[in-house]
Amino acid sequence: MKTVCCSILGFGAIGQGVAEVLLMKREYLESIGLEVKVVAVVDSKGATVNPQGVDLTDCLSRKRTSGTVALENITGVEVIRSVDHELVIETTPTNIKTGGAGLQNMLAAFQTGKDVITSNKGPLTLKYRELMETAKASGSNFRFEATVGGSMPVINLANEVLAGNKVISIKGILNGTCNYILTRMLEERASYTDILAESMQLGIAETDPTYDVEGIDTACKLVILANAIFGLDVTFKDVKVTGITKVTPEALEMAYERGYVIKLIGEVSRERIHVAPRLVPINHPLAVGGTLNVASVDTELAGEITVTGKGAGPVETASAILSDLIAIYGNL
Image 1 (cartoon, rainbow, N blue to C red):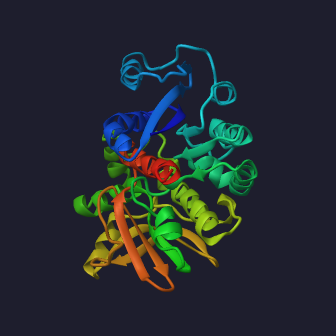
Image 2: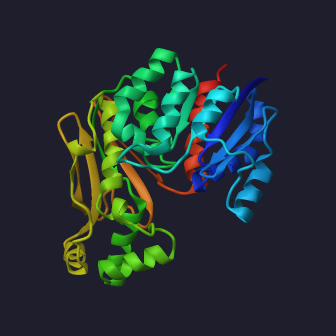
Image 3: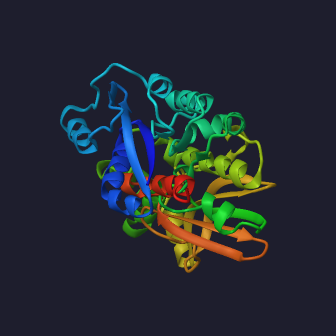
């Protein structure tokens, strides 16, 4: 049995989803020879640390009742440097302006020879090359399937399942909030403002939905795909972005009458990185509704491979983190 000691840095929705999935899949992991022992859980107010393994059920309970897991006033970087473990699961909130705590956590992890699995787009959007070089220099594993498409596999699909295929382009819907808004605007013949309010009330849109509706979130995901799959060295500034705020019910209805839906489509290739509302034929694989994400990977040998799935959700995103964990340690 291989024991993997890890920390969970960031205990919001996704961090809690990781804890739930590790509890749920404990027996399965043991059946493939893995014991995953969480030795620290960190949120914005502090941490719970136990070298023998923290009680994840207790952490979840305390987070939900008191709003924090903190028993010690200690940061993520301090946990990385002072607590003996080999894997950092980094799920702090995305910050695409500075990289936030996530960037500091990842660099500290690599500098101390630790592996990193993350759902945090910000650091990869800003400092992809630096992170990869730092990880390589220390011999650390670095995986980030959960940063693009939540539970929908795109990065590992292109780099591993389709290994040997030259990827020509990837295009799709990479933001469930925008997809929900456009779907509901057409269904209800309602304005953008009305459906945005509905999606915020349902918790589908953030209190500040700017990143989603202006196409910024989709652009960040394209940057990660451009660097990780196409070997480019680009940042958010290299993406041409148009959001959905100016799409009208009349435009959606007119398109539908002609056999099309309007979707926020992100597209990346070696020549082009672009986000904008586009016409998609009603019966096309990219014409998914609701909060679903979809990606079409166009390859040299295998042709076009399309995957659809939930692009958000704590447990769904945690499933991608779990698959990365198994990819690193499951064959040992």
